[in-house]
Amino acid sequence: MSTLEQYFNSRVSEFLSRTGMGATTLGLKAVGDPNLLREIAEGRSPSLRIADRVLAFIDNYDADSGDARAPSPRRSRPRPSPGAARTRRTRGKTERPMERKTNRPARILRSPEVEALTGLSRSTIYRWRVAGRFPPAVVMGGRTLGWFESVIEEWLHGQAEERGGGRADAPSTPRRGEAE
Image 1 (cartoon, rainbow, N blue to C red):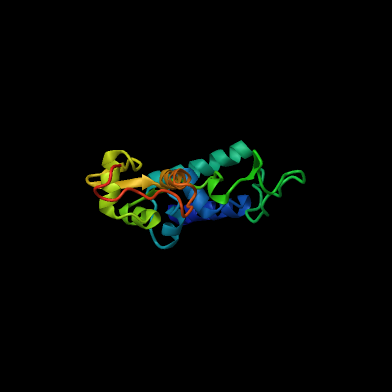
Image 2: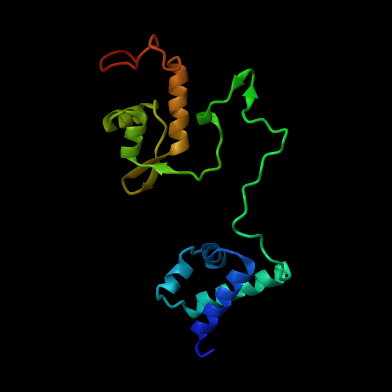
């Protein structure tokens, strides 16, 4: 090989083809940057420190796995066991889709998204937040606030249950001037 960059590229491409690992996974596991190999392919030269960390990861991966191949990246999803039910039943009720716990990442919503999700105006959200009737906000820095999506969804479900599940005869929210 004539340059270190060519050596690095050949080691990485050989590793990826041999193990079946994705380029983003390698970048993420080796240096914490899933875009590293894409940026290198677009012309970015890795620093010696980064290249050393990637090559050390490759060497350690080979040593730990004993040159065993990783499973193919295009595997079908695992099938549920034959005895697994499609819906969960608890106390005679079928679980609603919005009540299911999912493994999605935590997402922080900014004010416009919270307004759209709740149907409340910005001033009402802030007034209710100060009064303790709305979930507390997460300070994201400076004057920037956000709310965890899961907290807002839980609050909305609680409001629906508190108001009778959205029935027409359910009590409405108090209007300005009315007792809260």
